[in-house]
Structures are given as C-alpha cells and as structure tokens.
Amino acid sequence: MSKRRVIRLHGDSQRPAAPPSSDPTAELAERLSNSLEVLRKLVQQRIRSYLELRDGRKSAAARPASEPALALEGALPELIPGIDGRDERLLLVLALVPHLEPDFFESLVLENLPGGGDFPIFGGVKNGSHRGLLPTGETAQFVLGGVDLAARLAVSRLFEEEHAFGRQGILWLEPVKEGEPTLSGRILVAREWVDRLLLGKVAAPRFGLDFPARRIVTQMQWDDAVLHTQTRKQVEELTLWLAHRQRLSADENLGRKIKPGYRVLFYGPSGTGKTLTAALLGKRFEREVYRIDLSQVVSKYIGETEKNLEAVFRRAETKEWVLFFDEADALFGKRTNVQSAHDKYANQEVSYLLQRVEDFPGLLILASNYKNNLDDAFLRRFHSLIHFPMPGPADRLTLWRKSLPAGLTPAADVDLPALAKTYELSGASILNTVQFAALQAYARDDDTLLGSDLVEGIRKEFMKEEKSI
Image 1 (cartoon, rainbow, N blue to C red):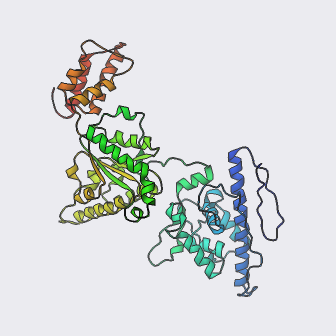
Image 2 (image 1 turned 60 degrees about the vertical axis):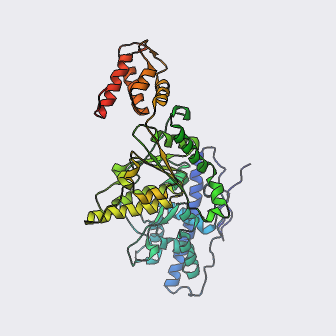
C-alpha cells in the first residue's frame, strides 16, 4: 500500500494529499506542486517576519514564532542519493522554481509590498529572455536562513564544491564580477538534473556551441573488429581499468596516491579501428562515448577554446562517460617557442588541456594518425599508448571475408586471398570497396558480387590517397 503524503506546517491542520495517480506524469506534477506549496508558505513567512522587524513592529531579538516544521517526504522524487537534508531539499525546490512558476517570487513580494520598494535582502536578478525573478545565493540565504547570521552562513556552505551538490555537478552559483558578493550569483542547475527532476528522465545532451560533442555508437561487435595481436592485447589491458577502477580508488593505500581517471592514446593510420574500438569499449561496459567535435571547440578568440572544452569536461566528469578526441593533434599538438602573442596563447591552451586531462576522473581517449605530433608532456601522462597499424595480408583477408554482404554471392573471379595479398588497404577502405561493389550489383538488379567491381572500388580508394593500382 502506498503512503498518504502529508505536508505539515506548524499551526496548520494536517491535510492528507490526494491519492497517488497511476499516471507517472500526474504523480510527478503532484509532488512538485506539494513542494512549491511548502516553499510558498516559508517565503511568505520570511517576508512578513522581515518587514515587521524592519518597520519596528517586532523586536530585533524576537525569533519567528511560527517557523514551518517542514516534512518533505514525497514532495520530490527520491532521485539524488545523499541530498536529504531539510535545507538541501528546499534549496533544490528553490532552484527549480523558474522552470515551474516564472512569477513565483515576484507575486509573493508584491503581495507583501503592494506599493513596491527596494528589497535587497531577498536577492534575485532578472536576466536574458526570462522575465521573472531568478533566485540567487542571497535568495537562498533569506528563504532558508532569514536574518539569522549563523543560519545564513550555513546556507552558504551548500554552494561549496565539497558539498554533494558541487561534487555531483547538480547545482552551483554563477560566477560574479570581482569584488561583488559571491552569493549574488544566480543559482544554476545542471540541465540534466532539471530534466530528471521535472520530466523523470534525462535527455541526451544536445550538440551545439555549449556542448561540442556527439555521442558515437556502433552496431558492430568485438568479433567485427580485426586488430593486430599486440593492439588487441593492449586494449584488453585497458578494459581491466574499466572493470576494476572502483576497487583501485577504494584501496586504502593506492586510493590516495593514484590520480583519477585513465588516459590512453590510440595512434595509427586512418581506418584502422580507433573510433570503432572506442565505441565498442563503451558498448561493452555500458558507458556513453562522446566524440569531441574540434570544429566547434577550436576558436581563434583568446580563451574561447578553453571555455568550449570546459563545458564538455564539466558535464562529463560526474558521469561514467568516455571522452574521445579524434585527430587530437589539432588540440594537443607540440608547444612552440614563443615568438608572438599567438604562440603565447596557443601554449596556454595546451597547458590548460594538460591540467584538465590529468584531472578528468573517467576514461579519456585521444586518437591521432601520428604519435610524434603530440606534445611530449601529454605522452608522459598517458597510462597507455596503443598502436593501430595497417593490417597485414592475413588480417586483410579476415577483413575481406567479414565485410562481404550476406545477400550477395561472390562471382567465380573474386579471389579474396589475392586481393588481400596484393592491395594494402585499411579496414575502412575494404568496407568502402565492398559497399561500392554491392551498390553496383544492386543497380544491375543482380545478386552476384563481381571481382571487377571490387577492383574498381579499390582503385577509387587508392585515388583518395593519390595512389594508383
């Protein structure tokens, strides 16, 4: 049997909530509505008590006689482990208000100050396209702590990085200009937590300037990946960290000595399986893999590259995501001798990346065609350097066999061992060649894969690299 939810307010009679609905959306809306009602009662009382004190209708030593004894059981979905304190739950509701009732704060202030007037202790700002009042850290101090200095200081600690809100990247204060009070910054809630708390699910991050990364997935399996024996061995060594990293960090001795995260470089020619291996690792360990889009990250404007990357790192560091930097030498290239202001800031970007990569607590994969293009300081900090060489004749033969379409029959002139021995192609090029030949068969309305079409496909692949058959 489900419990009847009750919101207890000092001085009010106990009022049972309506029976829970079988509709998850309706039940979520009911819980949020209950939460807003609790917050509304508290804000009303804080404002009235403060105005009485300010206008001399109450002694400065007097304490509010009817502070609500708030019971928040059932008021919000139980989605955040460790966030169960009274002030923490109320702060979360406070931060969600603009997403639920844009005029929530203004209506309460105008109700008690119908003639208007300055009310700086309440905090709040108006910003951007939102026309309502956005809560700040000062708003949280007033609502949760009133005018009691000790209580207000306790509220400020909820915004510290060491708090669960900060550690899990749930909410934080927007930075303010130098010299302004820290708590005058807006309360920001991570988009994913807004979705989780208001929609009951987490939407995938939308690719754009504020999140320049795309998720990569694959329908292939490990059997489809044809890797050099040494490469496969090193990849398996990498999987040991993914499987046992929790035990490493929990170890009484190692846990305090090793740095968080795991950094690995995949290097080798294009088409040799670097991206596929990253996607397969995510698939095997049920982790999302995001490829950083360098066209969205790298900027000619000073500081913009770091800002673009910080958005990805901050979003990913509280998840179990794998970050994949393809063509990494565009970002992690060697530092140069400073001969101009451009060189100076380019080196600063590399230094920022060096520190950020080292602090990332998850798996970070860099991919490059050439190992020597990367800055030596990065290479020293990698746990593993994994080479993806061009496949030899035996591996090429395996790739040819695994790439043939199931619905077409190879013609008598298709000699896969000869193709594998004669033409040095990567796995991606072999797949492109087979695709070309298959399309030719489909165009003929034929179910036969011709050797001549495969040779023509090889010729096209060689032309990309300005080579001839």
